[in-house]
Each structure stands twice: as structure tokens, then as C-alpha cells.
Image (cartoon, rainbow, N blue to C red; front, side, top):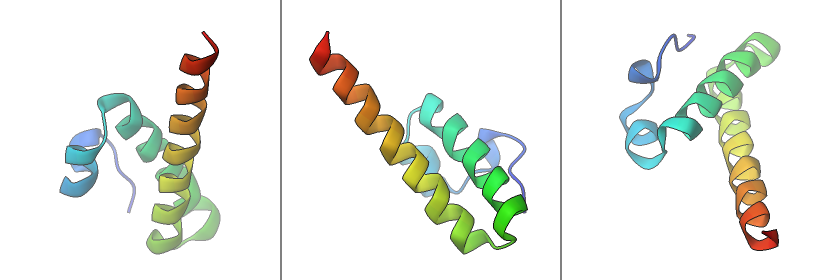
Length: 64
């Protein structure tokens, strides 16, 4: 199942993540579903992408 918009994301994702991170989650999830063919793995990949981006964003703030 692909997510066409952020409104299609699970409620937990919509309430926990900002709009920017929802966009990232959705893109990563959709890509991973195509690659792995399973939603559970795609969810793990998408959360990992969000965590990595969040860490990079925090690191950028510290360096500024």
C-alpha cells in the first residue's frame, strides 16, 4: 500500500511527526515498499530515514 498524501499516513505518524518529516516518511516508505515488497520492512526503513534526518538536522543546529 502506497501513501499518496500525508493524510493517508497512520495516525501515530501524523501526530508524532512534523509535516516535513511526514513527507520524508511517506517518500521513504513508498520507496521501500517498491524495493522490499512488505509494509513492515518499509515502516522500519521510513522510521530510520526520519531518525537519520532528525539527527542531521540537530547536528546542523549545533554547528551553526
